[in-house]
Length: 85
Image 1 (cartoon, helix red, strand yellow):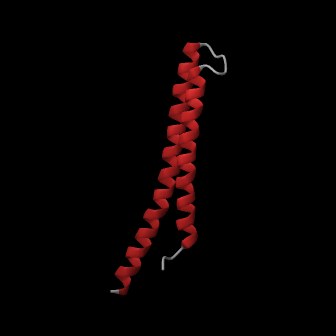
Image 2 (cartoon, one colour):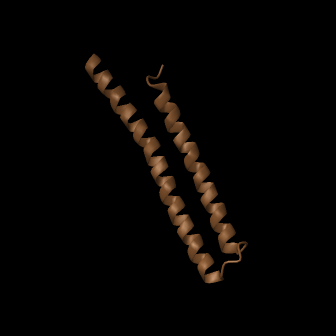
Image 3 (cartoon, rainbow, N blue to C red):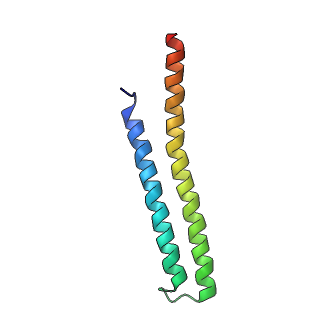
């Protein structure tokens, strides 16, 4: 049985949010670049790139947070195993 099940759940939720944000950023960038909002084409491409970069950064931070939780849990587990020996 794993200790701290809430932290494992939070890590999984952060990863799911990360994927959702990635999909949302890609869809939004495509919509903006396609010109559905009647933005001039040069500005639309620039806005699409900015949306992708900002979305990518946010996805990276969410995924890193989830992995950070898992790293801390792994450190705790290894420390506990070492102390038992």
